[in-house]
Image (cartoon, rainbow, N blue to C red; front, side):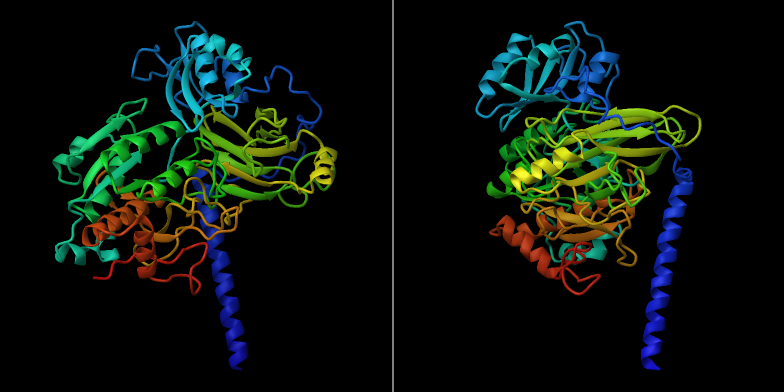
Length: 564
């Protein structure tokens, strides 16, 4: 009878869990618009049947599309003129006075030659880091720049994304006991890199944030006119470590992220907090030249403790290898389903990222296509991958209708199934791992495991997942591990859904991360001799275990806690 009772309890638990998961998915879909049934017939496969006419193998398809159609990408890709420090998105014009902001990857050892090429076409270099440049290039001279042999690839810079879903955390983590003991982060300098600090003056007048020690602005919209996300992050950090000195850097792109780090290092900060992420980079702990993961690795070597958000991608991600059961060149997300659905609300845009684990350059050529609910092709990304381009496809589409639309993602193998098989015979390699992300949307077919993003996947950064502060429940969106090279992530979890002046209600791993950064500042005031590794190990050893016994890929070591 005891055994039967145990089985019944287990069965009941599973039923309840399935009901709750079903309710959550249904509720979110109702908010966004319920998914319609899978379209019965899609247009014929495109990538296999067509050559990539009109494409340049060294220029990203989004750059080519914008040059051809005057379409302005979501990236802050334009400058009003090359001498202006402000960035004003305007309609694309091809006159030399209109400058595109581009990422230029140099051939190995040829950074100086790329600099010369930029000068030759009348461009201007903004940032140079680790063999990669961010530069202003006249729109009508981009293709000319691609002809220089020193230039390996031209694309738009990848944008930092807020990990937010929009003062209970301090007592919840026991930081208040440290305050009562006289430890408030005094003498510790903390840097925050974010995508905007609007309404800072209001928050400062209210006493929710301090006067910053110094600021750096790379943001197109301006330091105090962009998002208020960074201000909300700073509120939590200041509440946790009220005497810590704050240095603020506002950025848009990956190379500006690197530039912000170099500036913070010059300021002598000991802690850096970032509640932003990139899903365009490999989540294998290594990254590549100019990647966010390479930046945080450098910071660890420089003796700086860095904590970052794990990401909110658990339900926005699909991961696996290319499967083509009927041999038509289209990927099957599950048997019999060659399309993965999601919803775009009326008059809103969504960006889709497809990458595969074949970095830094790939000869495996997958393409990305988007169909509407009528099975009509509405957008695509079809970069060349011939052995010198990154394994990456990105597209953005706006639903201009007055109602929510149902859209379907298709992945095609441009080289054909035989090409992948032939490569396996020659190299012994299997098809690479694929990751698909849709920002701010829930996928019909989703993979929560290995949804961790960059730079959280790095072993040199403390990645923070999100739990509800009221009951220690893991938030459904919080990204999970393992990393693609098999390491456990996130490292720790911390409170979300906390009170905030900026957002009133601040959720997401963005809200969790500054609790950990503030805790590190308290620890460094009390034990100033501790290294970044010491700080991380101390916080992990104090964490309160949650979920399955021991560290895991959902809660990490457990909930942030500071025993006094």
